Amino acid sequence: MTGPVLLEHATEEIPGIPGRLPEGERLLWQGRPRWWPLAVRAYRVRAAAIYFAVLGLIGLLAGLRDGATVGAALLALVPLGLLGLTAIGLLALLAWLSARATTYSLTTRRAIIQGGAALPVSVNLPFATVASARLRLHGDGTGDIALALAPPHRVSYALLWPHVRPWRFASPEPGFRAIAEPETVAQILARALAAASGQPAAAVAAPPGAAGDRCARPEPVAA
Image 1: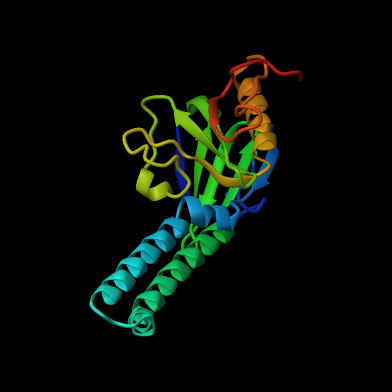
Image 2: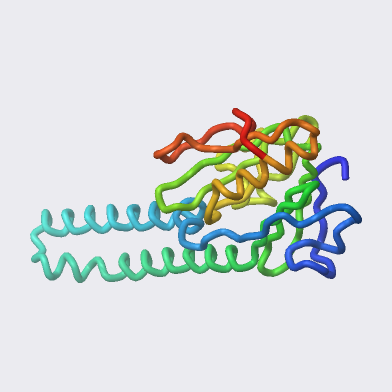
């Protein structure tokens, strides 16, 4: 494997990994996104709720300004409320389905992202293509790990979304979104990257005590 490889879903000896692991390659970790954090940060459920709430407030104020009673003004907002609930529910459902259909894997040689509810596909990211890794922690206890690929290796932002770092269209960074115990997973990744490159093991960590992000390999850690 010399670069990112997209594979259609195949027979799996290990769920989430197409085909068999080559001789000498071991599975280190597997997980999937937490659906609600994925809904909030990738599918923008909270932003959609705020949007419809603002529209509702504007509609209420406009009705009162035009002389309607509070009851009548609220009644006029029922269609908007139903539309908002439907939109938010659909976004939440899509996030739940996406989380259930996704498996993230780390082996001694690569990261693997398998997703797709209708037609599962897997993207192999050999460690030789990874220039750096970035961990971002969130206040809900989950985190994201993004992998910056060394040129000329590239992946499709549209194909991999939501399993990419947001807004990085020119140089998409695939990765693991909304995972539990992100610091533990980051350490597993750091050790695997170090072993693959023959370098001392190093941490992938966020600033202590606060949500944030930091590039991979900033400092050595004990083996």
